[in-house]
Structures are given as structure tokens and as C-alpha cells.
Length: 510
Image 1 (spheres, helix red, strand yellow):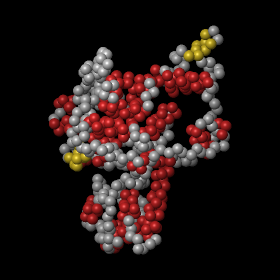
Image 2: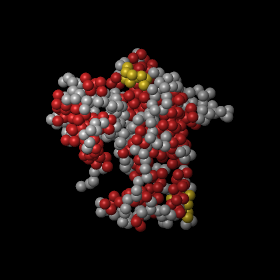
Image 3: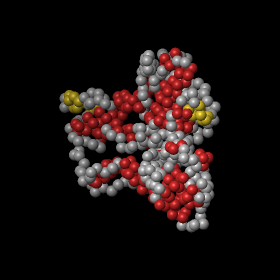
Image 4: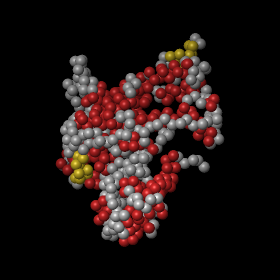
């Protein structure tokens, strides 16, 4: 039987781990009867990991919300659930001690004791509301989920066949093979190795011709002798360098990025109008890869290149990333005022989805109507991230020649499909995602999910911050060295496209 994946292992052992972690806190607290139970250290983690998946501010199963003090003290459909000082008359304790709640994984005797003593001591509350994402549970990830932690250099595993190992990655591959009592495949022959390199890096086969006893590869115009082509040899390294320098490299790998960011040369929806100038962004992606632009700069320019480099024509074209998605031309031009609000919210969701999935591997858009069902992202945070893109519009399909004229005065023939920055409107949480049901006003922010890695979601922006400040802050937050998902996601994608399968399950969506 194959070993379960690390993610499945976490799901399998989560109840045991949660019980063990909470139990340690309980034992320490109960060792001295004079020490009262700490709400923030013992009670809140227990409620977050075992109760809030059903009894939170969004779902309120049985009408009960245990996330906030006021709602917890009011109770649910059955009335009050907490009677401070008397556990035996508290409905919460009655349901817990009878194993009615939680229904699937009952609390251990030690976990029950922490609830009983907390009520007996007066049911004092602490930080309000309880953050439901402070700990991973059997149902969803919390801030302690493995992919949200700081990136660390792992220890290299022990292997027996050290002669086979050429680098650190080989040790991880070989350790798995040896654990399964399998041997590595035989070394590929020269012709197979050469074809693999070509298809991987430029997507084309080598075209070899022998003239007067000399072998020449016609696609790159270099000499290659397939009979002596060896892994890690001088000829191998020379071919790799030549392939990376080839313009075909950007064409091959650019298409993967364009697929991820939902690039299209028409608007979609009913009219599906052709975007005659979208190709400029496509060409920018290809050229960026061929010029070996650093990945963090590659991302920053697509989010805010026009602001970060206002005199750089290419940086402006890079922002075509933001407006590659569908555009409901009929909804905007023929819809009622209410319909236009709905269309705008759909457009924002498309941008948030593309941003989260392409750069972070997170389906942030799943939190538009409710808290995310797996990733630690609240509904409020969805609208805070949407507010970061609140000034991005594509209502005008083309920029003028003047806007795209380089600062050196040289001529530029044509226009490009890029965002039209506007002053962002006030952003509200929309109750159940309904554009007519406005909730609290939110300011543009990042996610709190990376707090364990030392990266805050607070970007220092106010609810009336201009578009330029929002996108610059977003670009820098995405590419901050403390952001653990940005590098993990691109490494996973590179591995996937080279070897056919990604090696990391970062979240539910990507």
C-alpha cells in the first residue's frame, strides 16, 4: 500500500495532534488549582479548533455563534448556553459532556475539563472575536498550515547509493525510491536526453544534420554530436545555455503563464469582441522570460508597472495582466444601474481570482460570499483584497498613441489593452455577496494568513487611498521576501511542467 501524502497524513492525524496540543495546555493549567484557565491560551484555541467550524459568525448552526462574546452569551435557538459560575446549568457544558457536541470528534476528558473549569471560574472572555483561523483543524487550514510557514532549508535525507546523487534534489528522489525498495531508471541515452532538453525548454525537437562528418542542430545553429552527448558534460551545459538563450524559450514557457492568468484576445460573454491589441502583453511576457527578468520584478510590473516605472513603456504594457479577463460589454453598456453593480463585482472577483491563483496558489475568490471553506481567508479579507484592485478598470478598450509614446520621443505605432486607472469607490463587505446588501466599510489590505511568516496583511492604506498607492502596496506585499507562497507556487509550477506532476498541495484550489 502506498504511503499517504503529507497532506493526507495531516488530515488523518489532525484530531490526535489537536487533542495532544490542547491537552498539554490543559494539564499545565490544571496542575495548579489556584491558576485559572486562560481564555486566550486554552479556551479560544479549543473553541477555534473544535467548535467554530459550525458555530461562527457566518454559519451559526442552531443559531449559535461562539466566535464573539456578545453572541455567545446570548445563545442560540435553544436559548442561553453559558451560565457563568455554574457549568451544570449551562447548555454548552451539557451538550459537550454528553458528547452531543462536537458530533464527529468528541472532546477528550481533559478538553471537557477545561470548558467546565472555565465556566465554573466565571466564563471570562478574552480577545474578541476569536480568530477562527488561528489553528488548523480536520476540516480546514489555519495560520499554522505548513505552506504558510517561513521557508526553511530542509535537512537532506540519508541515502545508500551516494554515487547516483548529483545534487540535493537527487537525495530526496532517491530516498523515496530506496524506501520503496526501487532502483533509479537507467541513464537515458544521448539521443533521448537531447530530445528531452529540447522539448522541455523550447517545445521543439532537435533537427540534426550530418555534413562532412560534422553534426549540426539547425534550430539553434550549433554543433552537437549526439553520439557523445552526456549528462552534466561540457556539451550538455553548452546546449542548455543555448536553449535558454533561444527566443523559443520565452515562447514555450510564456504560454504556461498566459494559461494561468486567463489570457485571451477577446472579451468573452455575448459579444466576445476581439481585443486587437492584447498581443502586446503576450509579447511582453515572452520578452520578459527571454530577457531573464527576476521573477519578483516580473510580478511587480504586471501589478503596478505603470506606477513603479512611469517612464517605461514596457512596464505599462505589463499591466495588461490585470485586464486579460472577461468583460461583460452588454452588462456595462445596456444594463441597469443595479446590473452594472453586479457586473462590476463579477469583474473584481475575476481579478482577485487571477491574482490569488497565479501568484499565491490561493482561491481567494472563494471567500466572496462567506469565509473560505479551507484556506484561512475570511469574507472580509476577500473585499479587502478586492479593494486593492478597486481602481483597475477596462471600460475603455484602448489607450491612445500619446499615452504609449516613449519618453525619448521615438515613434510608437499602435495602442495596447491596459488598465484605465480610476479613483476607487468605497468598498463594503457584501452580505452573502449581494451587491445590494452592504455591510461594513473595509480598507485595502492583504491577507493575515502569512502572519506566522512575519508578514502582516496591514499595508498602511486607508479606505480612500488612491489606486496608485493600492497597487504599489499590493505588488510589494506579493513579492515580499517573507511571503512564503509566492516562491513555493512558482517552484511547484516549474516542477510540474518539467516532470508532469506538481509536488506540493498548497491549498484546495491550485
